Image (tube, rainbow, N blue to C red):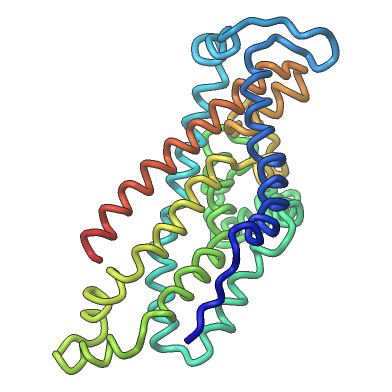
Length: 296
């Protein structure tokens, strides 16, 4: 078979425009945020250099910051809970359902819908009984009125209500990833294992799970890092309220920058978020690299 050899200069010509665009849209804003985070600036008047003053205020004097970090980390951890279930469902669909692709496409529907639509839909579902809320209406019809709540206005449960919506929204997304990974495992491996007496879930234990580790890592990274950057769903459903009870890092950054006009401080929060995302990405990759070497 002849291998097409392309000169490095030709490759550079095609890659360079995309690379420059990526650098301008990703790396330059990060550098600008780091730089702006060293200044006290309202976005209108002159910038005043304060060094690490914004970071000091963020870590020591901001009563909203650390609770928002805790909620963000809980959000990220909660987003990974469904991935093992997605893998299990992908295995079952691949084994027992002839047209599993159709079901996966149906489950994927919430992913392609606008977050604004989903947020408004679930706000209606979470409404009080007097406003036609479906959940409270079902509980009331079952005689469980004591279980009804103002799901999005009670500080103790509002964040958990958002977690549920996020899990529902991205279930089909991770199911599609896992289902594709399971389908790409060669059938010959299962046939050989069946000859040796390993069939069904025993084959999944020794074949599917080890080979699916790289795909599983993709879902974990996307879910965890994506949840660290969660913004749109929270803004649509609660805007960080009530009383900052659902503020995450991104919403706190937005409110600080565009509502309080503390652009320098908001940039400091953005810098912190970038560092956290990079750190956790490195940790997750390190863990899964060890798993891949172990099962490889």
